[in-house]
Image: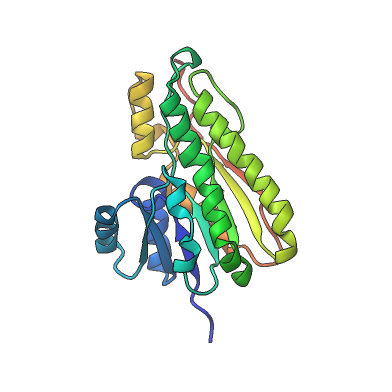
Length: 235
């Protein structure tokens, strides 16, 4: 009898994470979803009634300690989708903003991965970090976010080198601008008009993530970049 596949997903409440969770649930896979509060967990449980909900706040990584003990059996993938962004030039960069972005985008994925390593090793699973084009090139106003994503890229590279002997696959997906609520907020911060038709659809990014996760066991995709076809208009 084939074992039902299990996936741990962050950021399942909106955008890419929500589409991804729906796709995984729709094909019969088991979901373990993280929610920052019990209220949020209750909301997600109504959308994904078969999922296991774990309450932990990515902005407070200490709440992730011991989380691995709440997960039973092998894990086939850990999908790090959640993230925050708050644009500002360095001269106006608030310490609280810097700390939040580094904490949610880098520290929390590192702690969660550590917690779930025994389950991932048991399932010879895949870790997918949904990074950003800002994890490859830093632009003006993006220093904190890009620094967190550059760090996430380094963490993924180190994890890949460490865990290959355990059969783990580690992939980083670098989507460019994607039509999500986060992107709408970014446009507000930039003072730009938001036009979702110019950007990648969340479904396209999810297709890429699932391709990485579903790849046959004889290969891995360490890094993949997803870019929109429509050129970015001038600022």
